[in-house]
Image 1 (cartoon, each protein chain N blue to C red):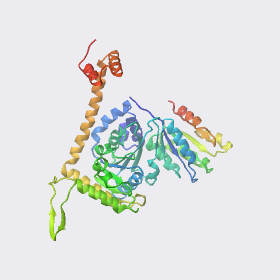
Image 2: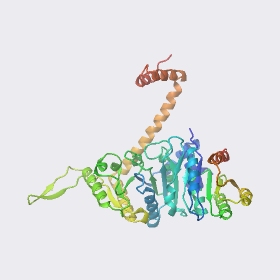
Image 3: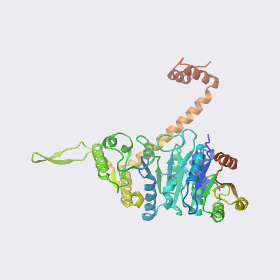
Image 4: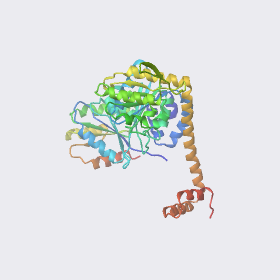
Length: 132
Length: 332
């Protein structure tokens, strides 16, 4: 019998030190029955891609409040691809200006969530994104 | 190329994927385990266990760093954290303390949830370790969930079991209870820069002496007397005690030395073979049980089984009688 669980990496790239949101999301995904690998603060894109590879996750959730998302997100997507993990879905939560959203989506970011987004919405989107 | 072949050639993505298949007990996973089995048996397996908050993850981080620095050995870490008993979800947070290991291709960290298993590791941890072993990782560190007093499964899996204690975690009575201290091959007193470390060390030492008596010499009425000890087997291993401050990397060389000593002891005494045999035997038995039960259940009409179960639920017959009925065949 197979026992497939959705595995999610929750990571905080960049230099801001506010990880409350990342923890709330990690906890919500846990309560939704997923296995959440939490890596903590101040991760480089290389560290995140490496952890995603070792943990063979289905989803990477990034928490970015520093405004550096236009630099960090493409780099992480690129590294995931380089490692052969094209199938991994990437979500971003944080402070993302409206005008950046279309470009991030174009790059291949699956979902973007700002302040006030409901965890139910995130859980639903993650589940949908990893449906085979 | 199959995943197994890619793994044997050192492909890290293939390794990660196979670990998932094995953890999920997917059909491909079992086949791969069969193919990989001849390549296993080379790694030294180190179990790290102890109460929550004693610093297991930090210790594993530093230990892996030290192995990379001193011995240039490939290190795999299997870090186990608990699954929620209600939702089956888990937050696996051991990587937070292992960021120093990032960027080193000779280290591979895999987080695992217990998925309902209560012994401190997951049911599939042994299989995951086999995959790492076949992939050529020479040192495999298995970090258990924060363990209380009876999560001792890791001792059956590991060659060397490290039990991590910290000052202020309990008195002498805690130390003489059966369970987790008994499985220690190496005892680590972490956070050794904290007050109370002498008391912890004294309590642990006296416990070890009770379990492994050594000759004691003392003076009584002016005469030197020797208290003889019961004969102990010459190849008995007496756990060593190592003091560490994991957050600063202190005591790691001593810890590696203690592990190496224990590994040498296992070889000399033949214990390694004995442990290997015991472990494989229990694995064989478990698989055999599952297979036999599956085969047996196929022979019993579902209706028959349901009826007997109903009789048990209604307290008409006991479970013992039910088994008798099922096994001895009560054809209807």
